[in-house]
Structures are given as C-alpha cells and as structure tokens.
Image 1 (cartoon, rainbow, N blue to C red):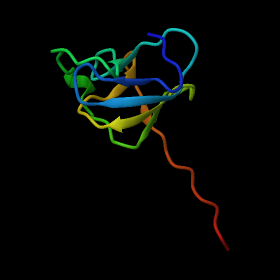
Image 2 (image 1 turned 90 degrees about the vertical axis):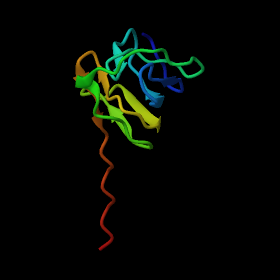
Image 3 (image 1 turned 120 degrees about the horizontal axis):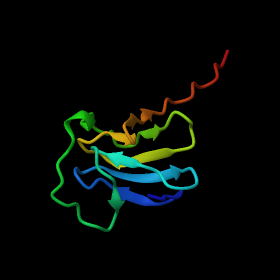
Amino acid sequence: MQIKAGTRIRSSVCATQLMVVQAPEGDLDLRCGGAPPIPIDEEPGDGNLDPTHKNGTQIGKRYVNEAGDLELLCTQPGEGSLSVGDTALTLKEAKPLPSSD
C-alpha cells in the first residue's frame, strides 16, 4: 500500500482512524489490528481483529516506526494496534520543554 502525508485512513477491523503525517516512498505493509487499513470513506468489513495486534490506539497520539520515516496521528481510537508487517509502531514521545531558570 502506498500512502502519502495528509491521507486519512481507517482500520478495516476496529474503530481506529488515522491521518498520515509523514510516510516513506514506495509500498508499505501498514496494518491496524493485523489487517491493512482502508480509505476513510470506505466502510469497514467483517474482518477479525488479530489478538496479537490488540493493544489499541489513543486519540491525539502520534505513532512512528523505528526508522522515523513514518508518522501517523490517531484521530479516533480503537482496539487494534499499529504495525508495519509484524513490527509494532511506537508512541512518539513529546519533546521536553527547555527549563526557564
């Protein structure tokens, strides 16, 4: 699946909705709940949530891959967790604010 920044997608097996903030060039094996995501305007099917990909997503949080070239913003939470292939995406940590001595 090819995605680009600004694209809105949703899980095909849970309520998760995402906005692509940054994406690498070329095909990507992106998954939510163990299944490939679908365009935001499509209705989810009757797919089953993979129990090994059931850690959930949090609204307003950003998820990144290890290389740092993929960033997704969760706009609606769901039960499925995000991954590229079988490698889970991680929660992007906030940068600490500078101290005001």
